Length: 558
Image (cartoon, rainbow, N blue to C red; front, side, top):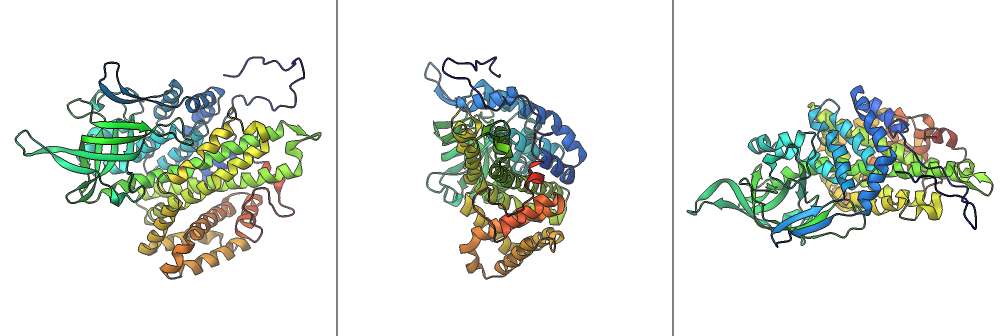
């Protein structure tokens, strides 16, 4: 809650020239690019459904919850006081309140409750907003959401677990799933020796045996380790293990079917650069009970359906963080005078913030368009299904490359007061790299894109169809598309060294095309000139002479 009546008349000086306290804000009403994207990419019910969340996330109460959840990281509780093994993680109450906000609101399940009817757009927009409260708690929300496509590979397993996944009820207690109304899910893929190279995983899966040594029905036993397991208090985990047939996907519940704690042992919690509110653990399976999902030799393909969903969220979260940083910088500039003039009226500061605003507008547009592709794929649209295969990777790569530098620039707009831990920008800056690493780091994403382009010619065709309506509208975009065609026609050995440039350019061209078609000309034209043309700069605040800065800034909250 806000501090009551802080003293400004001190013995040695008066505290003056400070921006007013933030107060309660409506993050949906304040966000014109988001509302425009929703009106374009989603059915009307989505914006209506998001309205209470926008008010809640913008409240001082929820901002304080986010700060508290991050300031008080989770603690590991391996044993009870009698020495009995627990393997539990204790979270600050603020974390649980944020989880309750997300789960009770149904944002973990809306994509499936409204599948093909705007559900993915609702989920992505909600994640974008919730990230502005605290990104860490969004991890278990994302993984619970993303577990659904994997569970569908085994109807018997899905029948037992999906009702709990879809329930809008948050229950943090360590209890068997049968005793809880709502369930959360985690994922554990990587191991010490392989990281992203999950084919090198060494965890072994063996069918359970009866006391007579015969194979037992249903259950398997896993032995091995996982190097990163986020949200380790989830009710169940999706994981990979070697079977006699190959690498399989397994569901590992926190409690076995007979109600005992499963032998999933937490070794330690990671001491991470950021993402402090969310626990990430190193775990070992000591004969842990599990059941297979899908074919025993198709584990990677099965689990990649979850990864495809989490990549969409990992593409959206940095845009939410950039939006929060942008608004912090703009509100500070409006309430601060330097050299006798309000910062927000000074040409150089206006140029910097306008340039940053362009980046956020582009990120919002691409995130919501990608969400619509998922929605169209659920309805059976082949073109949208093709775009849903590729666009999350493009958006994830590029949005996360832009995030850290963007937030550092926002810090500069505030100066020293932006660099202290009491301000949200320090937390955002520590958080910024995480989504570029999770669900495939930059090189992994680029190689995935190359494989998709090589194996699925329809991907290239769908991309050109998506970009076609913007051709002829802007010279820098047209020239960039010619360069892209040239590289896409090159032999595969020539593509790999330039894969990062290819993925970056594809993402930027999609962003530019969306803005040219749907945003005001001041936004679309200036974005293309400063991202695709000869005037492009790696630093923010380098806009061409005569850029329509006032029109761009008019779209920010007052």
